[in-house]
Length: 73
Image (cartoon, rainbow, N blue to C red; front, side, top):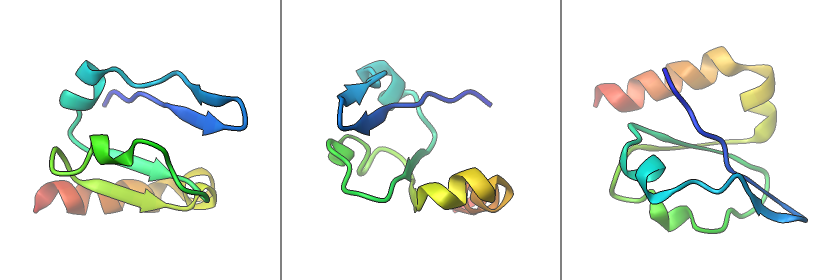
C-alpha cells in the first residue's frame, strides 16, 4: 500500500498532491474537522472516505475496514 498526504492549515496547502497522485489513486481519505479546499479533485474518480482526524489517528483499523468496504463495491 502506498499513500500520499496533503495538509491544509493556517499556513495554506503543504505537500500538495499532484495530478498524477490523484489520477493514480484507488481511494481518497479526507481526515478533517474543517472544510477541505479542492475536494472536487477526487469526486467521480475514486471512492471518497470522510472521517474526523481523531478517527484516523486513534482508530486506523476502523478506517482501513471502511476503505476495504468502499473498494469492494
